[in-house]
Structures are given as structure tokens and as C-alpha cells.
Amino acid sequence: MTVTINLAGKKGVIWGVANQRSIAWAIAKKLSEAGADLAFTYQNDRIRSSVEKITSTIGNPILIECDATDDKQVETVYSEIKTKWENIDFVVHSIAYADREDLGGEFSGTNLKGFRIALEASAYTLMPIVGKAAHLFGEN
Image 1 (cartoon, rainbow, N blue to C red):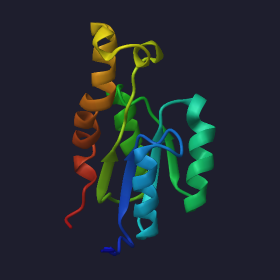
Image 2 (cartoon, rainbow, N blue to C red):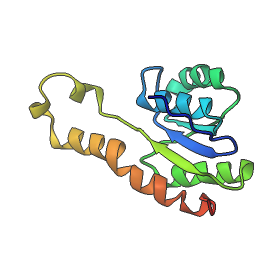
Image 3 (tube, rainbow, N blue to C red):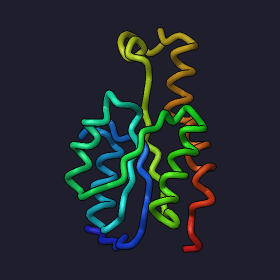
Image 4 (cartoon, rainbow, N blue to C red):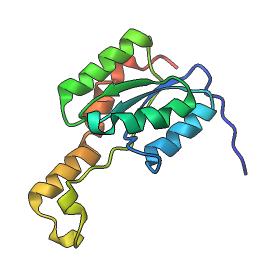
């Protein structure tokens, strides 16, 4: 069964696109196909060109650098969004991160510091991302 949805005029911020295999990218493509206007965050200059290349295939989205573990940077994202759009309709949080050394070997061998870094980046960041966006959500 195919479900068609019209998101024309809807605006959203996508967090977590790193490459073409990112779950966030698969979601963003579907949202774009449905007519949504999108803004993307990227973690740092190291992945900027990759995100620019990928997102250029869906038009001219807004791109903003942000380390999602830094509340001030999250606030800056929404300040920039506010200058371009009056409000937003949705946020997609699909951030996944762990230090490279914690991605190899056995999961049970992950140290506490590595686990905390992964948990903060991949899960806790949802709280400030949604909380600091609340004032931008419209009535509908």
C-alpha cells in the first residue's frame, strides 16, 4: 500500500545527515518528495561538503553548522531558522555518534566515558533540540 502525503508549505529541521546512508537522509528525501521545505544541520566542517553535496539534490535547503551537544549552538540554529522562516512544523532527530575507538571490538568492552559520549550525542540531544524549537512551532 502506498501512502501519499502533501507537505507543501510545511517546514522542518533535519538533524543527523552525515552521508547518503544516514537514516536522516532517507527521511529527508521522503519529506522533500512530499513538498516540505527543509533545513539541515551538520556537525562540523569535516562533513559539510558531504552534506552540501547530498542535500543539493533536493533543491536549495538551509544548512547550518551545529554541535548538537552544545546548547548554545542549538539555540543559534533556531535563531538562524527564525530569520528565514516564521515558524517550523517538525523536527527530525536522527543523530548517532560514538568515538571511533568505541565502534570496534566488543560492545561489552565499551568504557563508561565512551558510553556517555555516545548516549549524550545520540539520545540526550533530543531534549535541547526539541525544547529550544518549541517557540517556533506554529498553531497547526
